[in-house]
Length: 200
Image (cartoon, rainbow, N blue to C red; front, side, top):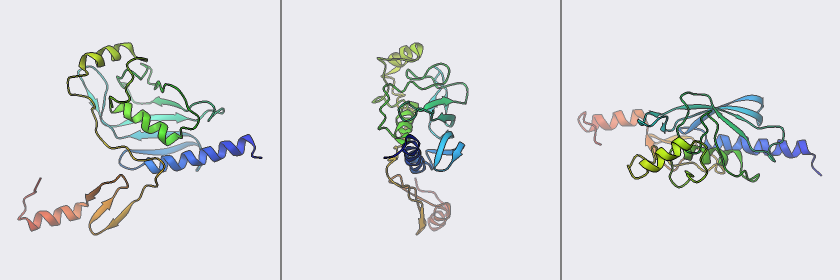
């Protein structure tokens, strides 16, 4: 029978793998406490366009700290934004902490992160105006809901359970997120072939 520490270590290792699977163009991370794959605290940089005030003003990059407390996974991860001004969103407290709703122990860290990132995008399917952490942001969101500014970022979310593939061949970089983008060298070559004009 596995000890509580063995169970925790297994979960930490699975979480680390999920974090690797979603890293790339969406986010990068560094362990702050613990040695991979048994990481208990992360610093994460997220590359998503988010709203920080009612103008609205946008920010494309966000740093946050993730702490997995001693009682984790029975207790939820603690997510705290490090950049100010903090996100202006109904489900984010004014102190930069995310209101995650109900914690399900079966939700791995990668899936937890994807759910959080969807709030940064102002994904209307996941924004919960009925249980606001920021009442002012909720009222603003309800007034602006039909203005066309939501979502403010439309990146597709990777699957935390699928290994991220990074492969270079035939002038294409496969990101693992279901898309292929031409490399810079390939773009330059194509422009030369078309007489120096870029085709959009």
